[in-house]
Image (cartoon, rainbow over the protein chains, first blue to last red):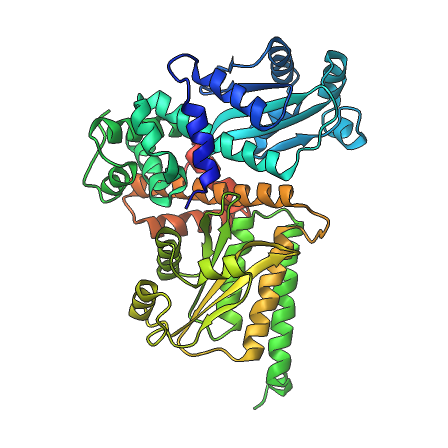
Length: 232
Length: 242
């Protein structure tokens, strides 16, 4: 059962949805929750297409350099599907782990970084990264808010791709549907049936549920019971 | 004719088996096995070392939701899933109180009526939930299902196994903080999700059940000496054709 905090963060994310893009809302909320100086969202939906949304000019440079260098906490977070903490760009451990990135970051005035992957199972969507201009070790509440936001952001991005309306997205906020075993199984089945990547399978199931006014879990159950096949 | 083995007293056998099991679990973690793998081995060890019919492991995520990570049988996976979805059962209570929760007779125990009914249908009489605990943090619970109550010694063995699993999970480093624990929990849960996605792919490809798909995945990972989560990832991303 998801916590109230997750729902709170979700509601905050859907505020001003008519005015600002999803990327802008995710990074603005992240900046606020994590007490960060800058935040950015990197999405890699295709195999080599990477879009950087939200964020500031500083984060654009930092994100771009990480992609070019293949080095840095955002790159590691996406690759290893696990959050990365870089508390101080002058730290010994940090410099050992991300030598190229630490040099460039320090020059640009970045001292602390925290990056959360946005993913579920084998679906790797990207990462949400916070930057500080002073060294920064995240507090437990910053870390847990960041994880929850990355979780809610995943839902929001999938809903966006599936064309789910804002009202429906909001009403399903408390459900934490992503982690349900049966949904993950159905996604695997559809991916095989339609010969599409796993992300596309997940989006297809979601849009089917939405357009037929059903719960995601019910569509998943019908697919697993082989009572329902999605069209190519 | 007596073989040399039979001269060893029974309790010494148990102690040796337990020691071997504990070493196995900690070695797995040192060699970088995924948590899903470590916990699957642990639940199987419980069934081998103790007179229990089945064992299951649930982890608490950083938003306090429970996730089924490993189990020794399909029936227990379903019972554990039931606890997660219906917010009822010994595991939930164990994670909340940080204490052992036991019921030696489910038919007369009125605490979790729906859960007890399901468990009784599977011929389980007694159930135990032991906290997987490190310092003040409970990372999850070990669920044991048996056809008769366990002795105190047997529960102590179960506790050793649970502790070993928790330490393996935290890679035996007591300095680790809550952040790292949260991070590892999430990784374990997502490892489970990758496996579920791979089961879906294999089930569809070969027209087999989810259970058979899991066996296929597990056998392939054993044969190639690959972690089951890595194998699942390779199946889902089509890097490997299983």
